[in-house]
Image 1 (spheres, one colour):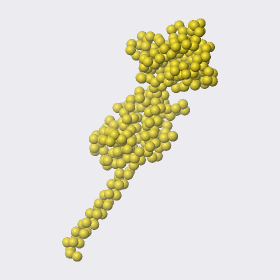
Image 2 (tube, rainbow, N blue to C red):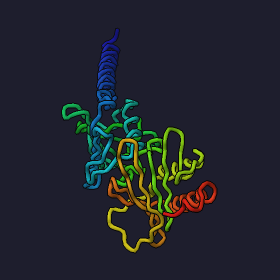
Image 3 (cartoon, rainbow, N blue to C red):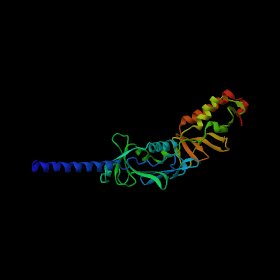
Image 4 (spheres, rainbow, N blue to C red):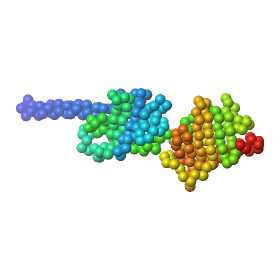
Length: 304
């Protein structure tokens, strides 16, 4: 074999070895942190923190369920919490797209990138800086626990990182169902409607009323979802309906439906909170109460 041929073969062998080492290194790099949430048990997660634009949202699992604890104490939106935890429970994979953060701005991971932290306890948590959504819209770019690598996460959690406090607040005005109501009172003008519930029987001012009608009026009202929140006192309110609920566990919740300008509001005494609701909600409630009075009650029972 000629000397030049031996040299060429030697060079090819060296190139092959170098290529193999490069592939091995690349493979090791891209599989690092391939499942950032693999050690998290979502059934044991007790805190979610989101830091964005210098403001921190903290959501904690308390004995009564999930609650916002910062920037205010308020029941959390269980739908949003569960969607985020479902994304974590799916154990999404992640692959390295850059071995350092020099290109972080291009991936949306500059200094202002939001951070999501999922915690079971202090010793067991995952913190991710969240960047842009990937071109296929299925995932997003993240940096995990400050490891200085940019990853392509196969699940899009950017949506949750960008949500404002209002999105994490529970928009249910009442956290109980129709079946939990023992008694309810609605004052419409000078007329009082007293609802009493025992087993499957409902009475209003001592008169039997079909369950379907109760569901249509009271059930739909207690299932009301807020459009927004009012964290200040209301002025120049026009009262529409006063109401109070006595629950089977002894709890009493009271409030009123009011109107101010073009907005309709409902209050809840147990949370000391005012909500903006759709005008059709109050219209349906008022119409339903009047129909019960017309169809099921004697005239003498409609007065206080």
